[in-house]
Length: 247
Image (cartoon, rainbow, N blue to C red):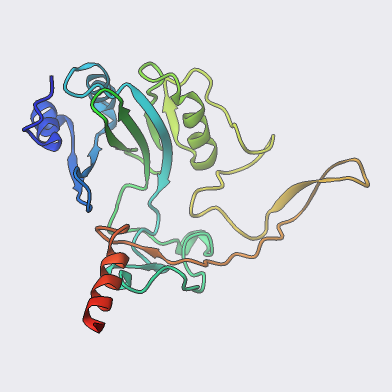
């Protein structure tokens, strides 16, 4: 059984060693930190199986799986820690990914690996949650292992990440699109997916059929993206400090 006297992050580091690239603790104003394990594709299934089956962990439930595109991470529209106390309601001009030509696309220096598959696990037995992040080695054709053999519920989650981000899940028994229309070209959640010049689909009641028309959504970034260590708490702390100083 897990020793409650040993922090969970230390248990994970001791068990997996160099099988994990990083063990990141996000410390909030709660009793236990939020933990992210970064795992290379070649180690993902071994680590995931141990997390599910071994008594100190017992992460029997997969609650979410999604893709992430880190293209342009930390650039252009991003505000960094300077924005921590300023709130989230500011509109900004769209200058980042999705609004540029391919030759001038931004390349992130903060995160050189572009695509990641992120798995959220829950241990009902230990009342804990854990995040697994697996970066695809190549951005041109992102491939990571499927975890269906361990958590069958991942089936549709992996199909969604494949459809929207183009992440290929090796070993998936039926990897095909799940949300986009038949014949759709590209992956709409990639940050270099063109927001103008494409067509959209709608049902025309007068014609009694599906019709294609130019995209009617104007690209605009309404909320800037912010990099901060404690995104859920910084604004509250800043407001609390300001109120205290004003008394």
